Amino acid sequence: MAVVSELPARALTLAASLAGLAVFFLADLPLPFLFGPMAGCLIVALAGGRMKGLGQIAVGARTILGVAVGASITPTVLGQLPQMAGSIALVPVYIIAIGLVGVPFFRRICGFDPVTAYYAAMPGGLQDMLIFGQEAGGNPRILSLVHATRVLIIVSIAPVLLTQLYGSSLDHPIGQPAAALPFSELLLMVCAAVFGWKLGERVGLFGASILGPMIAAAALSLAGFLHSRPPAEAILLAQFFIGSGVGVHYVGVTLAELRKVVSSGVLFVLILAVLAAIFAQLAYGLGLAPRVEAFLAFMPGGQAEMTVLAIVVGADLGFVIAHHLLRIVLVILGAPIVARLLGRGTS
Picture 1 (cartoon, helix red, strand yellow):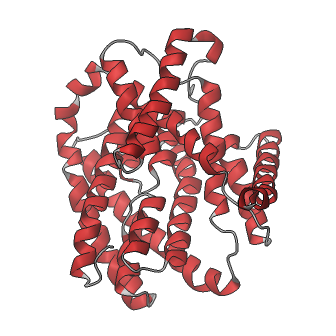
Picture 2 (picture 1 turned 180 degrees about the horizontal axis):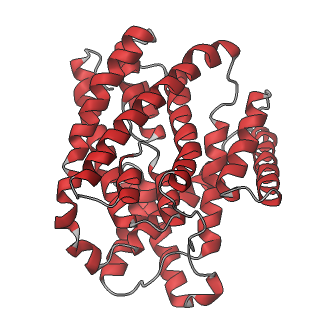
């Protein structure tokens, strides 16, 4: 019965996503498969529509990005790891700086409790921070809105900055058509996506839908079985579900929440933007990274969203994702420790 009652809400989500895609596509706006569904669901959510996420279908779509990253990890990329060391070493300092600024901001200015303030400030994955924060005694509604706002704004402004400040193009080929790829490689990609995802969940791997397929595809790539990323159609499908997932997080938002919680999230994004710009410029100025790669590596967006942007601008995917993986790993490993220091502990 619960599944049946969810069907209308999910149908509305799908309809809003498709409508947004159609508008963006017909208006020739950038990244229609990402921004169209995001905008469509956001508008319906703010209008009071009762939508619901698309469940395992949406989660499964994220496996495509995991395979895309894994297939990009080649022996050549591994040989470049020592060259990334200097830039990667900045990531822990970056996280500490965010915490030192963000926690007092949410605690003293926004009035959040200590646990909620910490998990709202940490730039981990949206779902990870929501789950960890709720287990530690934080406010799940506040955490959901703050992190959804972070991802929404960053994903929206990053393409503008990439095109206007860095002169990047958003029409870089995202992959070959499925018809141009060997069937054997397509089959291997599907196996890497499904088995990597499910095995990752079984062993308790965080972000299993992305990291499991990434590890499986990387192993196939390094062994010489995979030579290309998933087809363009699959990447577009992943963009579609990621976009709708961001918009759906605003379902049921009230005017009071818009005024206090969402506005706090917006202000914090401005703080994050300044910190990200400082560290990106530091990495570029020290000769540790090219400008576009430095920008994408230190943008505190979601891992999936930053993967999409790295693909569409033709950035070094291995370089960008290495920084985001380390950021997320450090945030997640530090979460239980800080929760205990805050006196609440995780259950």
